[in-house]
Amino acid sequence: MRIIALPLTGPVRGPRHTEQPSPLVYYHFQMQPRAENRRAGWVDWATGKATSFWAQFGKAPENSWKVCLSLCLERWCGC
Image (cartoon, rainbow, N blue to C red; front, side, top):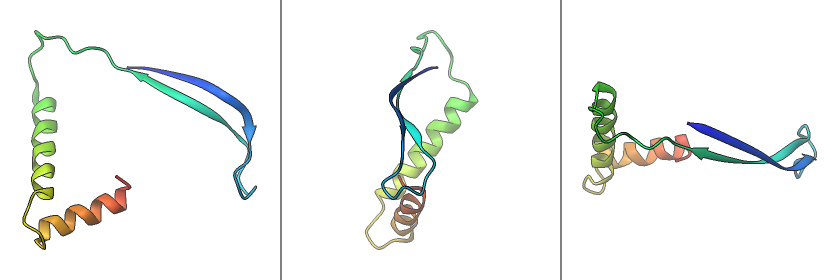
């Protein structure tokens, strides 16, 4: 992965002037394309399993504990 950081301004204070001045920066992330002949390893399997498991929580019937947990954690994480 390559990260390109481009400063847009010099140091700028926050709206309430309580923060230390910091520059506004634009970040661009470049990901390497995945090789097609690469075999999927256990990390890819675990990531896919966790993603599908979490997606099923959001699709559960309304008022179930899975939907409640999903919504609470998304609010807590800021997703």
